[in-house]
Image 1 (cartoon, protein in one colour):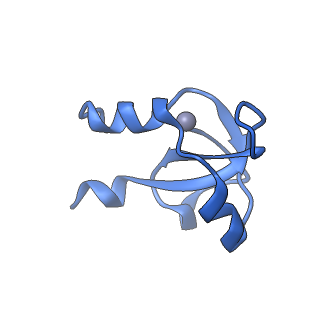
Image 2 (cartoon, helix red, strand yellow):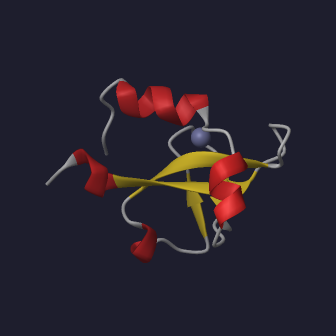
Image 3 (cartoon, rainbow, N blue to C red):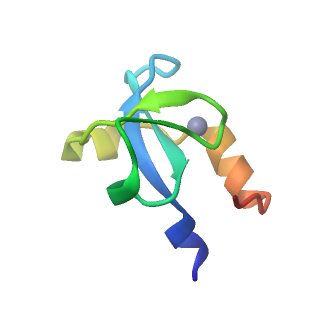
Length: 74
Ligand SMILES: [Zn+2]
């Protein structure tokens, strides 16, 4: 299995950044995820289907990024 199969990125509603959406990393696969999941940064977010603009505009969560880069994999 590749590391990519263990998590997925998704823009979710998050007011901590200017756009109102932030791209967080979640465990598992999008197809298996429920309506709300804990991200790798430790916060729980409601999952919705993002628009194409959301993917383009939402900034990446630095904490999720650092957690994945540091080799953490559940
Ligand atoms: Zn995050």
